Image (cartoon, rainbow, N blue to C red):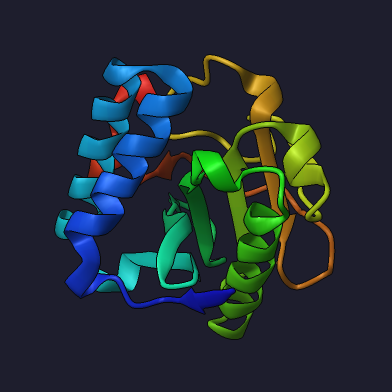
Length: 179
């Protein structure tokens, strides 16, 4: 498997990948919603505020994860939000998602990112070192519809101290549908 952090020339293929993967898993409406989100994230987010990692197998895109800056008003730590992430339907349960995230977290650590937060299945993310957090520990930018899925990881290995202040996500994620 090959990993890449270059996305600028692959916006259409990455967007189509997310659309198709979410459509297959959750239906056409969700596929269109996530495809639109990815298009906006990749084209409207400042380069300093986004990291995109892809996994390719035999030249085909089989996984992708997008991390965007999450700013806490009274906290100087570098925080990024993982959203969305996908593994191709015919490539799931093969360890691709875990391998992609291990690679991405290592690159983010090297880039001095201190904390990564995501909103997903605590069992899956727990395998990669994420732990459940509360909104008191890390206020979400918008109300969470499933607070039990709010998980985080310190990339410094020094535990997770609460983040200070309200948070602001990138513009593309400022839609209640994603929370």
